[in-house]
Image (cartoon, rainbow, N blue to C red; front, top):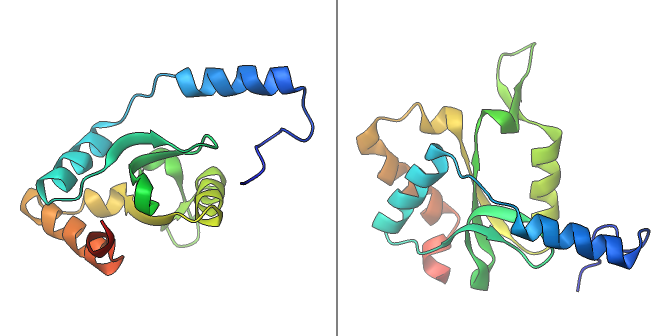
Length: 140
């Protein structure tokens, strides 16, 4: 069991109130997330959409039994490197990834700039390749 965030330094009643508020928060997935989820279903990767783990970490799409997840990185997940002009994950995105991986999750990342560069007919093939490279199909 992993220690709960803040449980070592905060009033347990406050922690419980924060936890309930977090888990009842209404999530509004992006069109990008919805589009990717739809194609994942079409190619046969069953998943839970907008999954929240026991310790409160959310994943865009997840197969909880195997601890496999997909994170869709929209523009808010990145900053531009001023020297090179390339996109780099921001700090909160990197932290979330590290926390999930430390808890045993295997993740695939779908950055918006890769997705938007694909023609519609290429998107299913792109996702299939990502899933196969990470062996997501073999473990379902």
